[in-house]
Amino acid sequence: NNLLILIICTTRGIAKFKGFEFIPVEKLEKVVIDIFASNANVLNENGEISILHLREFMKQNDVIRTYLNNLGSKVEEADPSALVVKRTNLLMDLSVVQAEIERTAHLLDAMDEDEQSFANERG
Image (cartoon, rainbow, N blue to C red; front, side, top):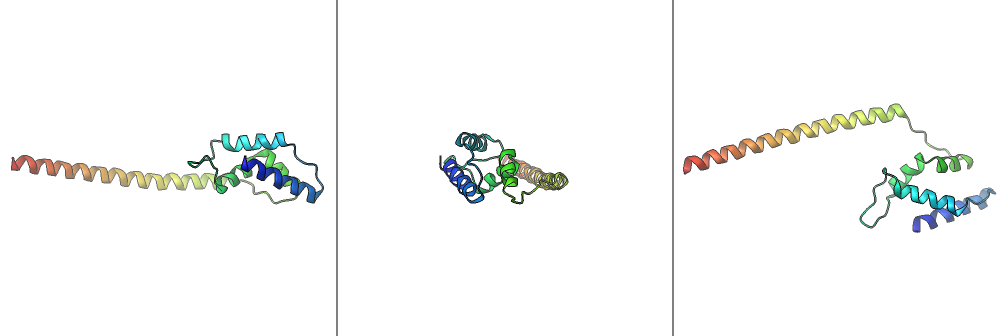
């Protein structure tokens, strides 16, 4: 509800300032529902969305992007090649972390075997 109220107030203020027609509340309600239904968004324990996730959703949502374009606002375009590079780098980082986890697991197994052997020798 708070997010819907914020969006209604913001869009109405901008519409008044720019001389646009108000966006129907029903359309704004759908946008808010889409925000919370989106798999890209992670809600906290109170069911709230972070500003970062809201911003990312707004950059990807066609309705919001069209609205911002109509305002003459600069809308960031997603660079697919940059996203591929970022994903590749993240996957490489993940493989390094995964290798370290596996190495640590093997060391722990070896330590457990040594402790077991020592316990067996001691009787």
